[in-house]
Amino acid sequence: GFGILKELHSGLNVTIKDLATLMIILSDNTATNILIDILGIENINQTTNNLGLKDTKLQRKMMDTEAAKKGLDNFTSPLDVSKLLEHFINGQELSQNSREEIIDILKRQQCNNKLPVNLPKDIQLAHKTGDLPGIEHDVGILYLKDRPIIIVVMTKNLKDNKDGILFNNMIGEAVYNYFNK
Image 1 (tube, rainbow, N blue to C red):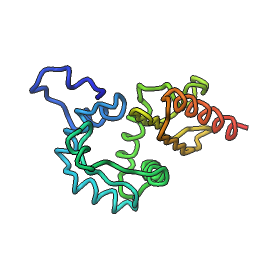
Image 2: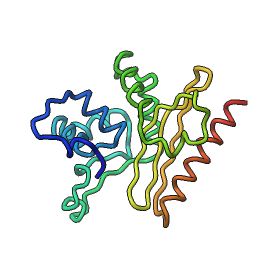
Image 3: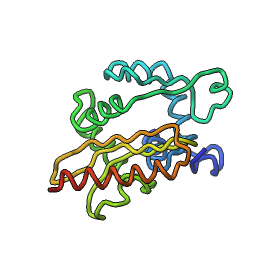
């Protein structure tokens, strides 16, 4: 999968914040898997459950084809992702400082070929992308006039991933145009 950690020498000393940053801004699967090891799948699932994310379940690490062959997969829903983004904006489970750090990392996303493509360059979008064959996701918080607007685009069963990317482009532009009236 994607990422830079797999290309670097072993024994590299990185912080949890470094891993989270790589996981978000570069979709670094190695960073994600290290965080899963540190936090534990059970703890992650308990946390998502405590946040009321009923459709979200982590059952395996990223790119674990053996676990996938056994039927173990990871699930979420647009509603759950929207709820999670709401927690990042004003959730009481996180300190203000933690929420600001999360949003800052999301604003530094490096994969910007989906929701932000047709947005003016001065508009801030804190977002996370995801893709696999037949899947193109981009979810985030669009900041217009100091007003956060949650956008969740999740596609599946695409015959051509380009269609999902173009769909994300159109949704980003449509949401911006609607709320920027």
